[in-house]
Length: 130
Image (cartoon, rainbow, N blue to C red):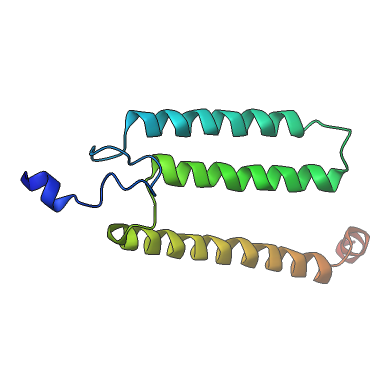
């Protein structure tokens, strides 16, 4: 048994897509599966977006599902984020980054909503300046 095999025993686990071999960052097969999946999801989004046969809410919901699937494909096949014990710090860092992004986005929407509700209409502002 080589030193690499002893220290890298988690590699090759069949539960982790994209890490079937003993390579450091996944196999060529994993990258090809990820690439083809990403292209298929992108094409599906471009097909659904201009669709007039679906209700507008259905189009938005379908695009949201495709966007989440696209993110998962990138996380699993290209960034190699998985549930392995060795990935605990990466998953924690990703969760913290998502929390910070969510706080910024929700806070910005909240602030813009309050500004929109509390500001005077443009006609009143123009009369005040005269």
